[in-house]
Length: 268
Image 1 (cartoon, one colour):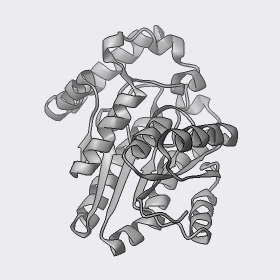
Image 2 (image 1 turned 30 degrees about the vertical axis):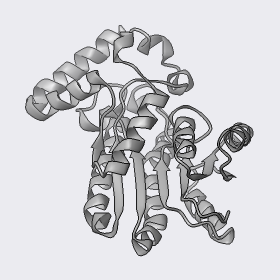
Image 3 (image 1 turned 180 degrees about the horizontal axis):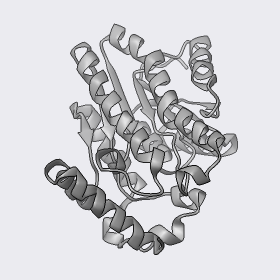
């Protein structure tokens, strides 16, 4: 890939927020490197974006649950002489159920994808962005990363909180070199996320007014990182929740989150 346009790598790009980000960046004259596990869906998306926007699109099939995947992506781009000006760490999923009721391997894979791979990809690609004096990194966190944890999301909230802290620290370190790092913290979003985790029926009890579309989330995330914002919280209800977490006692927030979880799950 060798054009005069900027190039962005988007993980988890085959569907949902990742695919929406691919559309937003392509519409804004970026070339793309898309990676995900499902190669067929990646190729279909790449063909669509090439036709619609005339951009260059490179696809890399990778499973970020494998520790060697970030280095594999980096090495392939190096071999193709592809230099990045943008990175969107979007790949993610949830592990439904309570912590001790889920096999450790599932939890370990989850940490690898949502924590270790995010940090590793930033570590691999950030030095070149600093060297060239320009970079835009969006690390997709969650509103849960700004709130106390709730039952059934044992590692999710902790992992997303890590992403927020990592993003803010990297921005503090690299901002003076022209690199903006943003933590994107969406709330409930219309994607296949809840179908994959088997929680669709449960979350459908949440009023539609509290949901965002993947396109809305991606558009706001793109605008935020271009402005140099440290944090982006799409959706009115998510903004209210984040504000409440700032001012209410943590013990009260934990109680509220637990009660809300029980109401949605209709269990316990």
